[in-house]
Length: 170
Image 1 (cartoon, rainbow, N blue to C red):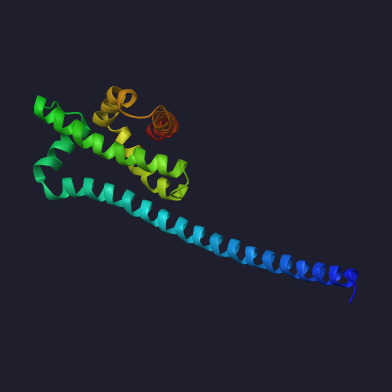
Image 2 (cartoon, rainbow, N blue to C red):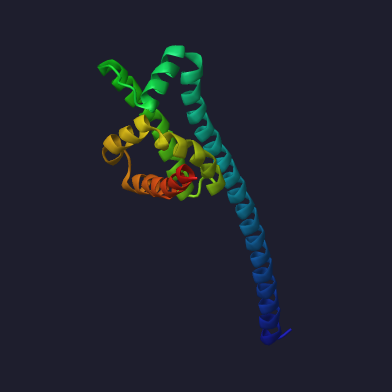
């Protein structure tokens, strides 16, 4: 066997090794892609669960305590509240809007689907249409929430108000 024949065999073995290496790399990439997809689904499910938990805890505050529910109702409709009641109403509103803001940012980061956030939109719209919550929002929004969230909520308010005006005219 000549040196040239040995070189050709070496090239053949090298070519087979490259093909096998590429096949192995492709297999690893596919496995990693599956793992990333699975991790993404787990993260999304976790964020959906956390978002639901935040709202559930808030609703439980109202459902479990008649005094808190009454306070929230009086604040929402714009009744005059005592100093302590104002602090408590502010706390309830902050908890609720912090959950809304969390969902907003999770959606922007791609951790939850947009339709998950859309579920909260009708609740948010109804709350912002009430005198007490709209006054609270006007006072607290710019100092308590991110500018992106404030713009999104205020955009929602401006979208909803023409519809309300049309309903009142009918």
